[in-house]
Length: 176
Image 1 (tube, rainbow, N blue to C red):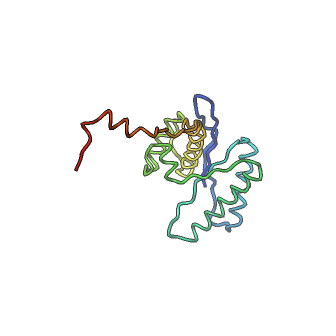
Image 2 (image 1 turned 90 degrees about the horizontal axis):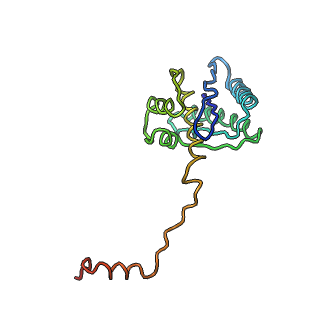
Image 3 (image 1 turned 120 degrees about the vertical axis):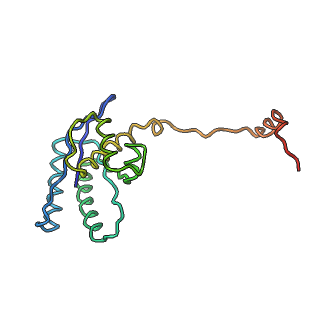
């Protein structure tokens, strides 16, 4: 389970921390959930974030894997909510679209764009960590979207717009 913490100002996105929580398969599932709880709680205490974004689970064929992932995400979400941090969820496609402009981008393409956006020079250690960073950057891009900040007003058409069009374009009238 990866995580990424960023700081944002008007001109840049700065990476504060990015990593993956290492979960031993030798520990039982409940111990692993406890580790996730403790790590997320520690991150919240250390960085005091204003927002918490998470990737929506991608439905696969393995129901047991989906159940375990859902539980792990539920623990992380519960910690954030307990701390009073609003939670937002994004689909994998939305995240890729926000970062690369292509909802079908592969992990390497996403990482290259993250390096560019956040001015990162390091080599990727874990795609779980870079995926989490992509979620954080996607969320920031959604928050700062020009379209989201402005109310889009519908175009008003006058009742006589067709009459005006016909009057101004008599050569385009076709009769049968």
